[in-house]
Image (tube, rainbow, N blue to C red; front, side):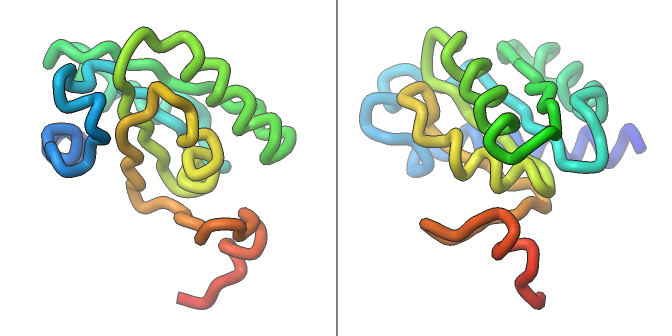
Length: 135
């Protein structure tokens, strides 16, 4: 498991380091903030091993604890964490969290979105419609 988490953290760091993934304003200041959003059947503690690796590597990492009472409440919880950021931020979502970051990712702090085995709805598509797609 630790090897998988270490590999995942390395992949996540590679995404963060991609200069083409950042808007123009972020090129002068690399993202040092990372916000992690969990899926529907877990809580924020699932990110603990990844959190530890990223913090050790010098990143400021925040884990959103979604209430999972409604999609809107989950997006609002993520936006509250994003509002606390003081600079360029990478927003990461796993599973259902991908739909959450698609909505919350319009925050001015967000310089890139990372989807980790995550839902990725099209523009204007609802979470429920995205979940009904046949792969």
